[in-house]
Structures are given as C-alpha cells and as structure tokens.
View 1 (cartoon, helix red, strand yellow):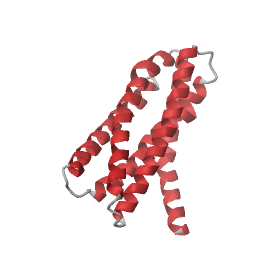
View 2: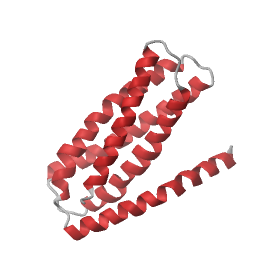
View 3: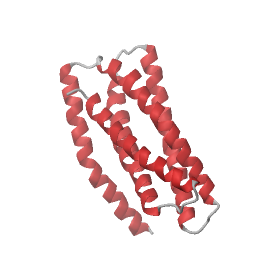
View 4: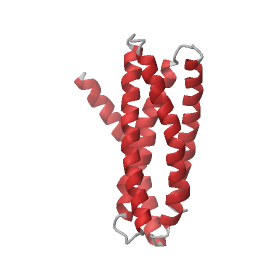
Length: 178
C-alpha cells in the first residue's frame, strides 16, 4: 500500500461527516432545533480526526518529507496552498465551536453564525479533498522510493497510535484547568 491510501480513506470518512453536517444544516434552515449532540460530535470530529489526525499526518509527515525532495514548482505551490487551506479550516472550525457554545448557552443570535460556518466548511472541504486526491497525492507519491513509502506508512501508524493518548491528555488537562 502507498501512503496516499490511508489519507484517501480518511477523506471518505470526512466526506461522510460532511454529509451529516449538511443534513443538519438543512434541518436548521427548515426551522428545526439544532441537534446539539450531533454538532458537538461534528466539531470534535473536525478538530480531532480531520485536523489533528488527518491534516497532522499530511503536514507533519507527508509534506515534511516532500519538502526535502526536489519537486516540481507546481507541486510545491499546491502543497503551500494546502497548508494554507488547513489553517483556514482550523479557523472556521474554531469559529463553529464558538458559535455552537454560544448557541448552547442560550444566545439564539449565534444560530446564523453557526449556519454560516457550517455552510463554509461544507462548501470548502469537497474542493480541498479533490485537490489532494486528484491533483496532489497521485503525482507526488512518485517522489518517494518504495522504502521511503514503507517508512512513511509505519510513521502514519505510529502517529495514529499516539492520537488517542494526545486527545485524552488534553481533555484531562482542560478539565483540571476549568
């Protein structure tokens, strides 16, 4: 298996969550009450899985290793764009979290902000994923030898193994500080 395999599988799971978020958005727009559990879960998923786990592997392993290669300028430009897009998504998820918390505490005017952030994320991610899947991952994997790809796959597995410990260490620390 090539390193792009796990990253593309992760994209499919992110797309499934986006569909759930879009269904919730449609319900909110139809006047239904926000499903707070779904929204809390979606925010946690975006922060922990999509950003920290998925984007983490891309930025901390794949992009890091690719940056050491003599790659084509268009690939370097796409990689830089992707890094900027990850930062954009982080900001939108932070804003979604803030709107969601305010809404949960009774600030009904936060509904429109939450809707806006949901719309932005739902529109943003498909293009971002397509850029990675179709325009970046396939051509850039060729810069790595089979041994380098195998080492990267192992580093991905090690990275994933640390994620649960990282998530819950931060959770306990935040609870202690509260």
